[in-house]
Each structure stands twice: as C-alpha cells, then as structure tokens.
Length: 138
Image 1 (cartoon, rainbow, N blue to C red):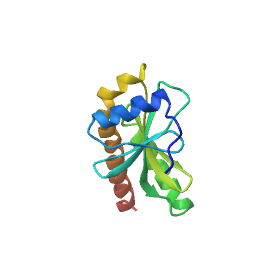
Image 2: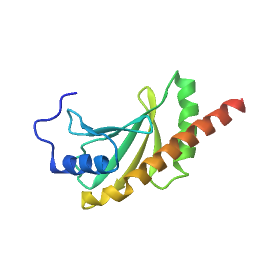
Image 3: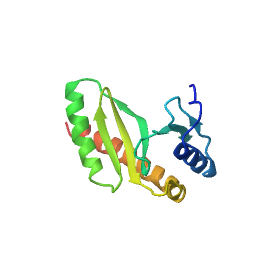
Image 4: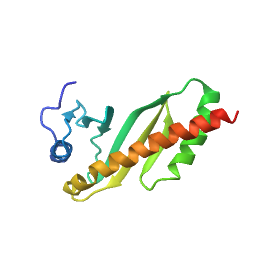
C-alpha cells in the first residue's frame, strides 16, 4: 500500500491513537488508518467530516446469492438494533460492520478506541450467532 505524501492532521492523530492503544497502524494510500486487533483487520477511513470517525470491520461474511442476501439483511437489521453505535451492513458482495461516532476534537477518540472495537466485535459475534439461529430454524 502506498501512503499519501503527507498524512492529514486528523490521520496523524488517529495513527497516534491506534499506536497508543498498543496496536500497529499503517496509513493507506487514501489516507485511512489500517490496523489489526485480536487478529482482525480494521480500517478508519479518512472521512472529510473531521469529527466523524468510523471503524470498519470488512471481513464479516461473503454473500452467496440473492436468497442469502435477504437472510443476511434481516439478521443485520436485528443486530444493528442491539447496539448504540455498531451497525452491520449488507452491501456489494459482503457483510461488514462499523462503529460510527463523533469525536471533537479528534484527540477525544483515544479513550474510546478499545471500547469501540469491543462493541464492534460484539456486533460481529451477535451477527454470527443470530445467523446460525436463523439457519438452524429452517
């Protein structure tokens, strides 16, 4: 991945926040922050809305077909209603999850990073469990 010539001030703060949490971040070519937490890959895109922070976990599940998509959408909505900031999305050919929040100034993100990742993991685990329950009920 080629990093941008000069990371934005926001990206530098986010890189520092991830680093301060004991994780190893890298800057993407689009200016986002990529890192691993407990073996899973996460991305904080470089959104133009500076106080808006979104942590994305893109590796939840692939969509097999349209029938599968309908079930996944039902489960995603069910999971999204169980959390305050974590949401599960069905888009393209995959299911992904995100924590979306506003932090201003951006430095206020540091204390909530790990909690945000924990909530995101909760959403993914809950999605998987709800999906298994729906499939077993068939």
